[in-house]
Length: 325
Image (tube, rainbow, N blue to C red; front, side, top):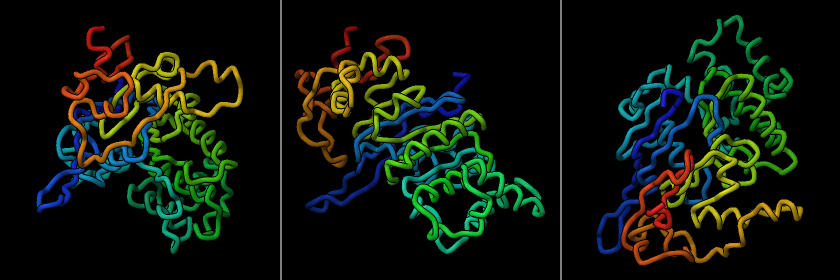
């Protein structure tokens, strides 16, 4: 995996909780994830609310401490230094949060917001700060005049552009995009996505793109991974993933994607009705965590948690249906 910028091995992030009768349990938000991200790709991480995808991102950023496992970024195990991350590591890995209204300080000007990473990481000399901020704003399609405004005085789409500008200011190699358009109006979502993809190519960036929108991943992701109850259940290159979805949960998600033409409808898997609700991560069922909602379950599914298998080259699935294939 010499072309991997990030390798995650058996990552677990558990949170202790108090249960009835004085017992202690754990929310298994991330539960044994293995994932690699190649340099220059857009890795799509998809899942329902509560699947653990944002917790995975926050653990990667050092906001949560991992319970177990390794995260290796450019050869450095960042789990081992999560409490004292170097400035170089903080510079190389940036994040764009879902809601720019809460992730930007409304008491600061946009100039102050973007200046901070420039100053902390010593990107430019003090005399060149304003010129650098102006050029970064132009990268995200905002006028340099925006540096004198505050987040409260601009729209949601513009605030997210400022959040992206703040991430770019550190000259990162890797950006985590945590549902960066889900809080925005539909009218602005496409503009933000197009801008992100142009920046990815121009700046030679690698993205971990977290979303619940599978149809978006079809158009922008290099590879797609599906997360359910803290685990990866399927992962493949985008073309293979959409052409031949293997996991019953993946087929359920894909069959529910709304389409506007008969041609698109023909590409979808046969309709799979969603049954039941995602269980609590405090009380994950034994065996396969999806078996209570799966119409293809067998007795083995309620007993043994399946292992991730490479069914065809580059296409991995965690399901007992493929144990003998």
